[in-house]
Image (cartoon, rainbow, N blue to C red; front, side, top):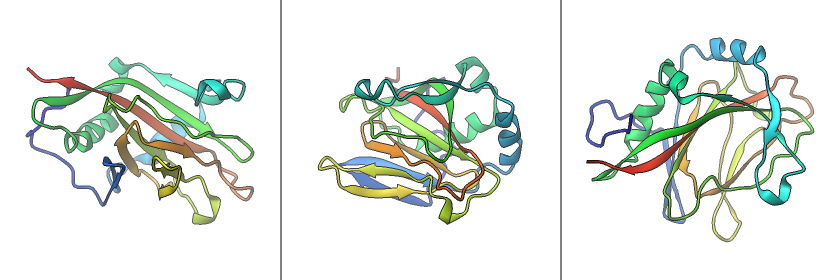
Length: 196
């Protein structure tokens, strides 16, 4: 299940950024049936179980988990896998270990955090699942450097994917007061693995 470097089908990114030497890539237009995912999520059972950091544990976020066995059967996984191939290095690839969807609305509090320790080099693949998204609705994911300066913001767009080194500090921003649709983000976490 690990992504293999050199395999055909690596997807080109529309935007690439490095933050403190760590990669971030944005991909658009990969998911033509994004509305099907939005409809499914509108019926999903979300629980307030997700925590950004230990010191913010009293502020839990809404999430629903997807088992890895089910994930790899979904068409969205193949697109994600192809995007992740571009991060592989000689001798190393990536294997998914967690998949879940977060939902946020106006008034929710989302905190800065990292998804892995600096020496792990894990990846996070984050899909924005929406039928439409107005720039005035907010909801961006913001990324910070080691000095806590904002380096990059990625705004939601239907079917947009951002893949980044999990050690980059980031935070999702909740939608603005004029947004009446949920902000769904589907995250797939990949661990770096040695290839034989």
